[in-house]
Length: 261
Image (cartoon, rainbow, N blue to C red; front, side, top):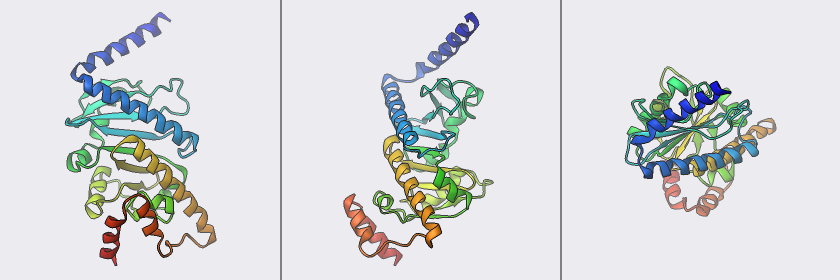
């Protein structure tokens, strides 16, 4: 027990030693991010939106800095289920590390990778405040099939102007570059599928993106079930207008539809 206690104290000392560069405002922002992430994880897990591995990772930009808050859900075998954060900059310099070594691929000596992972996206796309990588059953199914996911579920379409999610297949191209290229083609895009893996979403904050994940996964489920019945069909007349009117997207969406016609 003395050895265990000493190890814990040493790790805590390391954490506090690295927090001196974070302001009180940034620490408050971090605490709120951890609360939001914990809520999102609870909802997505309880609704079985997540797969058994609990792969749910958020990378949140710290305003007016080059810092990223990284939050990873505890794995299914974790004894410690506390939400822990890593704060690192785009170059990989760690400013705070609450992670337990070995708890994720980007923990311990590799914690700095959390800052680098989506740094290019944050640097080149100022509208992206958060990136979440997640594994869900039905999005994973579409991703394994290397199929673009058309959005044909009304509840999903209601909250996004994107009409489909592209598939990221060639991993010789870094994922952040694929995301940036996809956004250049369609600035309204909010997610991609990762071939033979999961999906990556982005947006303004943890809770809004988590809600989008739940809806897109539900739509992928319904559309997957429809495959055995001849496949999902495009929306009928008036459906998109109805859905986008419900969320205030219709005026913007109408122009997109007219340009695509």
